[in-house]
Image (cartoon, rainbow, N blue to C red; front, top):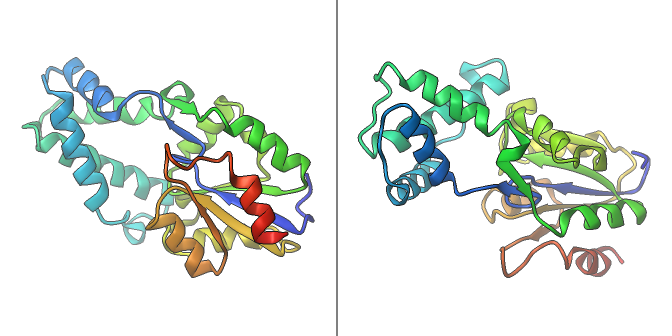
Length: 229
């Protein structure tokens, strides 16, 4: 594929191309137990979801390296999730536990690919689309996508850690679009009404919004034909 193509699709990663291979609460409970804390996945599920949805964006101004800012953000997620079930970051084992959890999600085996993704990416490439990943993720994503045999399907993989900005800011999308100066037909594909649809709207490009399991990627080619002809 060539970056000189006039057509470009920007794809989100987690929730769009990949998902955790097992429920996050089960992973957290397993790692907490390894460090001596017995917890219930149901309690962790609620505390994780509340923390993940309410925590402010990474403090990029305090961390010149965007990846460090993302790692600090994830530490806050783990700290607040743990605190809700009686585990505190002051515990001498907490640093090691966080490192183990963070490393776990750097492994491709911690993730699974949605079944329609590989054939869809092959079809889009054959149809002449440039493909780029634009994800609110840290640089672990590069390793994950490579290990899942997806990386070679993309002309560009760009994370919020790479540009020190998260969707719904349009900056991540704009940086990706700038790498394809010939592109005229551009869209974003993602699963978050706030982050993905918001970023697409701010960047001035249409968005194909997923709502799994009701809406997945199988209908994307039809949507592309309707949207771009």
